Image 1 (cartoon, rainbow, N blue to C red):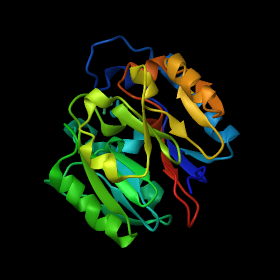
Image 2: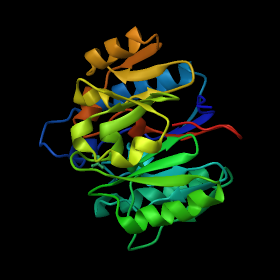
Image 3: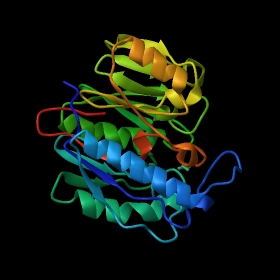
Image 4: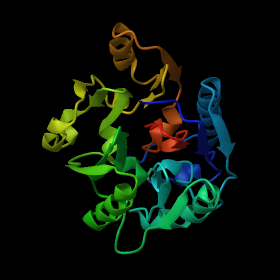
Length: 262
Ligand code: GLY
C-alpha cells in the first residue's frame, strides 16, 4: 500500500543555488527559491510528515536536490555516486543523516546513479538508464534491492534529466508519463494505468496517501487529477524548475515499517 512517508530529509537551496547545473542558462533567484522550498516543506508537514532540515552545504549548488544522493529501501539505503562529478560532495551528510535509520551502503566507482532515476512502485524499483545513471549503478541498486525482495525494472531515458522528470506515480496504480522521453516497453508488465501528461511539469508529482502535491506550473495536469477525484496540494516551484528540479527531487522520503512510499 502506498502510504504517506513518516519522515523526509530536505536541504534548503543555499546561496550558491543560482550556479546549479541546468540545461538552459535561465536566471535563478536564490531567495525566491528558498521561499518556494519553505512552501514545499510546509506542504510536507501539513500532510503529517516529520521533516528533518539539513543545513545548507557551502559549494554544493545542487545540494537542495537531496533525492539524487540516496535510495531509501525498506531495511537498507544506498548512498549514491551521483552522475555529475560536481555533486559527489553532497553524499557524506546524507549518509550521516541515514545512519541509524537504515543499513547504509555507499556506491563505489565506476557505478553512477541519481535517485531521480529511481521510482518505487510496490515491490518494484523502476530505474532509468540516463545521462546520470549507468548500468553498473543499476546493478549495484538491484543487488541491494534483492535484500528487501524488490525487483528492478530498467527503462531507457531518451530525453530529459532523470526518469522522474518524465514519470511519477499520482496514486498507487496511476503513473503519469511523458511518453516521448522514455522507452516504456519494460513497464508493460507492471499493473499500472499509464496516463499521458499534457505538460512537462505535470510528469513529476508527489503522491501521498491522501493527496497529490502538484506544481502550479502544471494546471492542466492538476485538472486531470482533480477530475479523477484526487485531492491536490499545489505548490509554487518556478525557481526549482529553473534549476531542472521538481517535487520529488527535493526530499528523501522514508516509509514506516511494512509500507512503501514513492
Ligand atoms: N540541477 C539538478 C541536476 O542537474 O542535478
